[in-house]
Structure formats: C-alpha cells, structure tokens
Length: 323
Image (tube, rainbow, N blue to C red):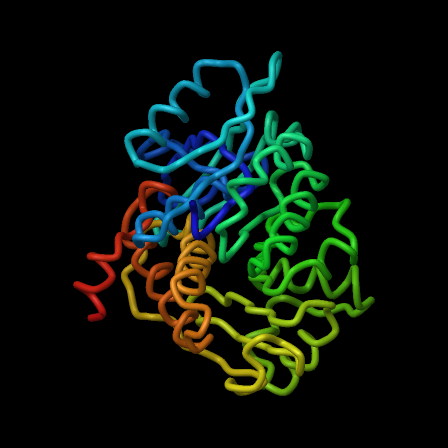
C-alpha cells in the first residue's frame, strides 16, 4: 500500500538553455538541449518517492514511443505507476526555456493527460485504501482530479492540491475538497481573482505584511494555504478549523534556503512532493517542520538541471541539512 497517491500528469520535457530568454519575435541560439521525464504529477511523485515514502502515481499516457520512455523511466526509478493508455493520442509534452539565472518559461501540451478517465481513477480504489496523503495538480482532466479527491476523503487521507496551472474549469467545489493547497504567487492571485473577486498584483505579495497575506489567504475556501514565493521562501496560513490550528500559529513566513540556482523548473514540484512526503510519514509532525523540509527539497532541486531528475533523495537532504 502506498502512503501517498499522486494523481496527475506525465509530460516528456524538452528543455533548451540560453544566456537569456528570447523576446517576442526574437530567435536565439540555444547553449544546451536535453529531454527527460516530467509533468507535475510525475515530478511530485518522484520527489516523494526519493524521500523514502511509498508512492503510487496514477496518470495517462499516449500510445506512442514517448509512452515507452515513461514506463521504462518509472521502472528504473522504482516508482509504482498505474498507467491509463489513451489510444490515438500523444503523450503529454513540455517545452522548457531556461536562462543563465535558472529562470524559466514553460509551454505545455497536455495531450493524454486531458483524457485521464475518472472511471480509471475510481477503479484504482484499492490504491487509495492505505493512503495518508492524496496529492493532485491541474494538468489533467478535472473530473479525474475530483474523483481522486473524493477517494482520498473516503479513505480519510489528507487531500493536497498544487493548483498549477490554474485550470479555467476549476470551481469552488473542487477547491473546497482540499485540506492544503500550494500555489505560487501567480497562481495565488489568480485564485483570489476567481474565488474572492479580489485583484492583487503578484509582484507585491512579498512586500505585504503577514496580517495582509493571511487575510487574503483566508478569502479562499481551503483550511491551509501555503504560498510559495521563490527566493523569498513561503507563507503559511491556517483557518481556525485547520488540522494544525490548535498547535501552530495562524500564519507564518519561512525564509528560503540559500542556494546557487541553475534551473528552477521543478522547484515547485519538489516542494509539493516533499511536503506530501513529510505529512504522510507523520500526520502529527508540526506543519512548519514539514514546510521547512519541503523548502529544503525545493532549494536542492534548483542546483541541478531537469525536473524529475533533479529531485533530491533523503540522503542528499540529510547530508546538506542534517537529520
């Protein structure tokens, strides 16, 4: 039985590195090209698995050669996967552009991910039976994501959503089915605009004080909101009825770990996967401890290129930061 069930996407990443990102209409020479496994679901499952937590990924593949790469890669990783094969459809893919500072621009073609069938997810009910955490994202069919959250709640699992990218069909019912969400600055302000009818500039978030950020987070129908702020760390906000509210401050800000970043592409996925891993290992762990663990995993992931391949292991985290 898996302690964490991840329902989400698999994309084959095609990454180009350049001295800077091109301007509209500009062609630039790439300094390096690489391809490898990715997709938010796969990345987060690998992040969790490499931290020593039993993990199962449920995802969709096309019926192409890229799907064979995905299966072989997961087998090499030792990651348990339940693959739905979608006939006549390509496997998902992503174009990743990375500049000299490790900043990125990403274009995703969901392909088979959009065809993940909620019936296929529900048929994996046994995989959810021992799960402590169910982790989902928004690169897949929303009906399948809703089915995963329903199964998670049926089995008493903590339901986590990394709302990336914010899907045009995301509604308040799906958001309210989650115990924890982990948006970045851009995703957070998009959620506020849709569900709280509040317009906020993402560039101003880090300059706002804790009380202001907490008040904004409480406009969303989710008990715990963790806003990832890149090099500025992250901000945690709990509602009064959140699972950790009795033992944690209502809100807090945690600084980022110092790193020399070469590629930030998978940092958010490293954070969400590591947070799920920490909470699955011990549901009584202080939430700030789990978040600090996740922040360290995200930091280490930026020191190497790639997304899934950049996820750190438990041994690497301990070697850098101690037990």
